[in-house]
Length: 362
Image (cartoon, rainbow, N blue to C red):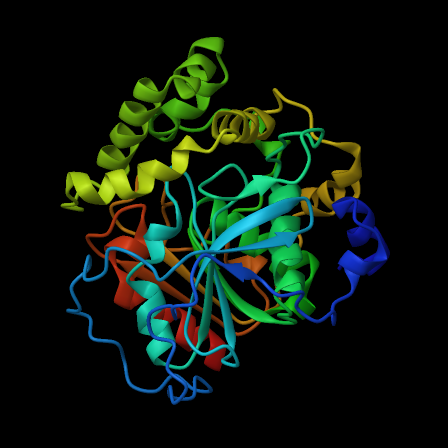
């Protein structure tokens, strides 16, 4: 567990940012209209209740209500919100190359159960911006995790269910490990995704390395140039969608809604730094060294957890979650989703929403 003083120094915003009980400063919205599902009389989310309809069609929703912005830590964070303002909070965290639309069907399902659902753009994505031009465009794992805690502080959320996939699962895992008092429960697609820099120096099996082709591409200047080129970036990210979600029959409009988030001026730098840092090819910042030392020890997560494995995701580890079971010490359930690829919340929104409700009820 990391103390508040260290947290405040890492954010670079002093003691006020470290206060876990600070009131929300008031997020600003683009419009006064309510987000979908924000009904005052929504049902309590204190228990699992009835199961979501597994046959609920994905793609039933194409947009959130008006997006909001709030200053949080080093960022001006863009986010969607759904559900009653006083409902138990769920923070849904997307991955790469995705954005908040991964949760466009999940959010109303949870909002209808009475949850307050927060879906932020990660740093370098969508309408999220750095507050200072002087801030390093750093995407190492602890920096991104601190963004999530800072957002909770800014919105006056003391504790939340954290649910994510890809970068978002890693972020949720880290918050649950380092600041368990902020995490009521965890839903993590892919299990325990805390980056082990020492282990990343070792080669994987050839099939696994093949699936990570873009990680190695980004280690080159050709890969960096491709990410900075709008057309090549578009085609590269579309190729990733096609290959890691082989059973998802999405249309062009679905991809383009998300691809708009890649026009963020810091997008290429954030993506390249993330993958180069994970391979030990880019430096982090000293302000995060203490966190990374703790994470290097692969800390056990003790909060209630549901882990999800997607059967058709090329990154899903073999063994039905056995490779990371010892990293979860609290109430726990593991589920494998047949026929589902990498973008679990958008491909299987009912299953993802059910995992959130069940984890919160452990």
